[in-house]
Image (cartoon, rainbow, N blue to C red):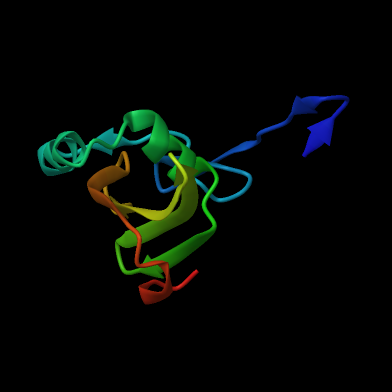
Length: 107
């Protein structure tokens, strides 16, 4: 919601996890595997934060949500995907990657 140039974010508690009014987790942690994948694939935490906070789509599975976003960097359109385990007290990013095969994924 925009109010005079300001963004208003409501936080909602559900099962000890805090979500924004848009249904996105307010905070999360990264697994060792996710950090290793981010380093190996040159994906920053800022890029993952953008994907999770402003996804193009979210695929929901039991205890897992897959956040997807198309991002253009250096004249290349990629799809970024971040997998979160949301059954934990604090949602956990379990893996991340990007791909140029946008048609392969539901968006």
